[in-house]
Length: 419
Image 1 (tube, rainbow, N blue to C red):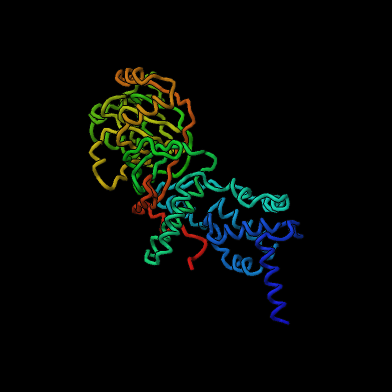
Image 2: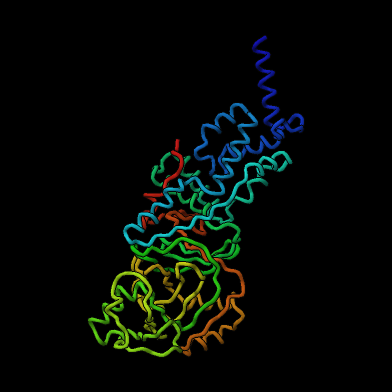
């Protein structure tokens, strides 16, 4: 009799989970179909977001308990929206770097997940996929990395370190700025590469030079706004204090050799100052505002080259040309003060001019050849992401692995341990 009763109960449980019985919601608002759908998602961890809730998942899988299922759905959604990386480990590079006078900035685009709202959606009968959809990263890299991770894990032959690194990068993709669609420029810092991705296909790809370990290229997202042809280089006060002024004090001909002029501000039309007009020694080294500015005029030898691509941000970081072309032959290319130097800026200029401005390329070339500064407005949305992905799946489905050049893999930790 006990055995027969057990079979009945077991069958009833299967009916509840499979959604074959009544569609009436239980007291928590869960329909059988919703439970079945969520368990299917959890079975393969479709969005890599169980994380530190493995024990809770086991209880849900064994019992089908609705309050526990609600708790797990909220936790799963939060992990999907805001990653499974310990937040303190993300702040560590910035805090430690500040103490050591090393620039380090990593933007995390956190999303708000309202527990009551999730529960309301369950009670309203929404599909679990519909509830999760606003938090699923749009970038194809998210799904590609999860696929690689699962495939390599199943072989049992992949090193734990590689699996960990892939998983860490899955979490980093979750923290990219949401809502920017499937067309964007992606600067992958440890790969030393930029891709212009349109409708999930790579249209332009080239080598880049990124910031040194002391002057790290920041991780953030902003929209490309305009292109500057034949730019001047407005020397930042920090570089003026620690590089330009010391060199100019040693060598009277330094400014002329490096095409640098001095102005009261960063306007080339403002009155020019001579080196003898300023109290340069008072602003050698240290920090703070310098009351005069060094400007490098347009030329083939300008530090910014002949073109720069501006996505305004608090870091004064942008993509630009460079006269130091030989550095692109090197495998390791962390040489800048934080900006992104392009390996083929003319190709980027041509493609963006034709597809993202209102100008004909012939007109753009005339402006470029004039050696006078001109500005081109971007007329179509193009987000630029600077990202730190030490694993990346290319357009052919191949997993690429790159050195951890800023040591972020060492400090950014997952909030769970693999079984």
